[in-house]
Length: 123
Image (cartoon, rainbow, N blue to C red; front, side, top):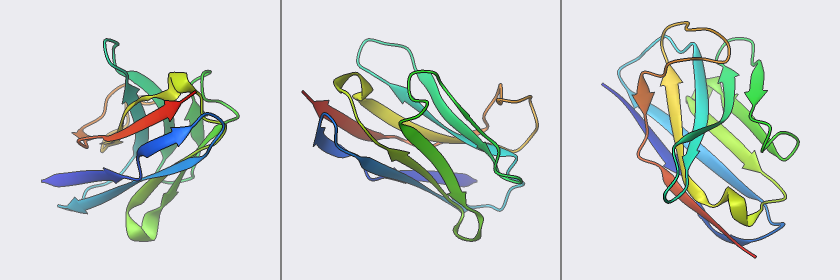
C-alpha cells in the first residue's frame, strides 16, 4: 500500500506564504503524476495543481496560477506546494494525490490520496 502524508498547513494572514509537503511511503509505485487538491467547507473538492513525475511539467488551476508553485523531490519522494500571496478564499483542507497510470494531462484519475492538511487564511 502507498501512503501519502501531507504537512505544513496552518493559520496565516492574507498576503502570507505557506509551503505544503506531501511525503510518499510504503510500496514502491511507478509515479506518473502527482497533484494537489483542496476542499473548503460546504464546497466540492477542486483541483489546484499537478506535476509530472518524469519531466516536471506542471499545470495549475486559474485560481492559483501565478501565486502557487508545485514541485517534487524525486529522490525523497516528496511533493511540495509553495503558496504565496494567500487569500481568505484559499482556506481549505489541502490533499495530495498520486497517479500510477497515464490518464491524460492534466490527469483525470488519481490512485492514492492523503488525509489532508488544513490551511486557514485570515483577512
